[in-house]
Image (cartoon, rainbow over all chains, first blue to last red):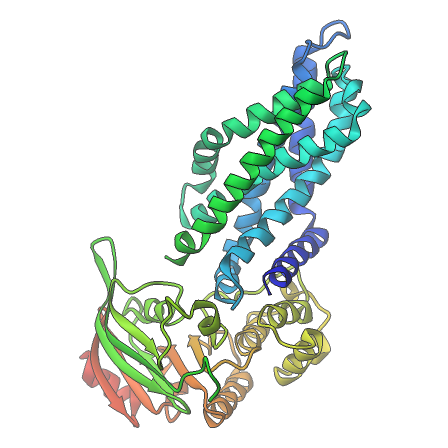
Length: 226
Length: 235
């Protein structure tokens, strides 16, 4: 039943998003705007700052992800549908996992546009030279970011200042994930790719993912009951 | 009655505080299968807070709510599967069609053939011809009818209805009264919070009058609700 509830919630979120396009378009527009502003500010005479692409990519993902998290839960707040989900006989962590996978899927779509854009504007074509490693680091980093973000966004759903509180609470906690994701992505940009170093950062990210997802699933039910 | 089922709900000396504000204070009553219990009172009397606690969405600050022999802390998911709630907010996704909304919740409540169940429910609500329309295009009354079907999609033992007559025209309100009669006949425990005393007249088996979070009076087989309300509430 856990898997079925996760699938139903994920499918519902994707259906709602396909109908409205609200979060996908705003998130994508925001992320692309970020990258363009960085490009205008930092690229001089056609030369991008060395090793800057990895950091800029993850800044854009984090900012766009924060926007997506806020909107995804605002949608559940407006008609109080989150209460209906919590009332269902499914295990409450299944609600969390369904929402988490919806956010991850959305950010994956945004990243599919951002990565080629960053590679193009910041002379970082090496990013695309190791697609499997890149996909692994993006997936693990996004999951780590979204796992904490989904929990915090759900917790803050009744707070009047949720839009301000979400980044204030979220960013300090996800600093380790962001550092590992940026360093792992930067490895892909080196002239001589070192698979061992990339594997180290990817393993670290996967470890963060396991810890954050486990803690979030464990705490979701008690924090959402009242 | 199957295992995991219950035939009464007992609210025993339940209080709920939000900070220093007492929303519900030392409330007790029992609702039995095949009866309709009305929670009556003005705005802010604690009706919605009580319903949220009965729905296991809020924990009482003190006191206990018993669902037969089931404990909400131990039997959480199984118990929630026997409760249906219609709240102030309708718990519907406006971007989805009426049938998609009901099929989604039917699936969550483990009903076999959720799409068929959804269409049957829409037929019951008199909205079969609007099954493929997005809920955002519905009037308030139509949304209310879909929301009622959502709350009852899993044939719950306990139906919690918060102001279910909101937005309904006369014909829809009469249909809802008939539907509540059918629920009662099927052995459902219906707890209804309303301040529409005219529509509740003749419908209730028990009436619990709430004022400032406390039980002001509890009446079995209430008659002349409006007069009783005036006597109890003093206005």
